Image (cartoon, rainbow, N blue to C red; front, top):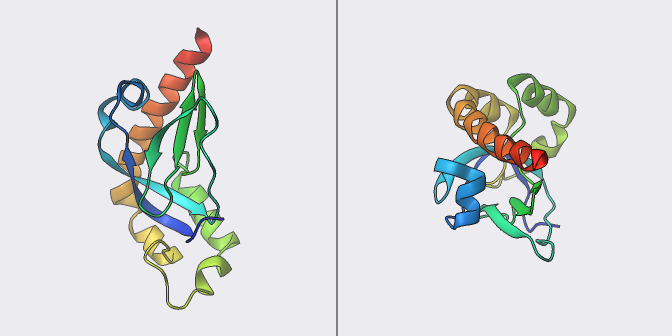
Length: 136
């Protein structure tokens, strides 16, 4: 288990080495807004390298050869976020006080328009690099 839950919009920090630049392009070494909904974490597998982390959960994404592993949810659409908020609203409503790493459904919805475009760009970059690796 992760020490805290991450639910809603949050920042990840990208690594800046050559491997991260290959996978992340212009996002390497930068912060990006992504969507989270987890209370777990994982260890980086042997031979793999972390490319994304966050202050509340060190391991957010890793790569090994042409394999990509993600903890954060860069695949989200507005419809998916709304469905998750409705289906699992008790995960956030039961927390009092609300930790900084958790947002209410209203907070998530309010930030859709400002945070989603950058996340889509990150998803396009990561998935594009992954697909290129599958073709080799």
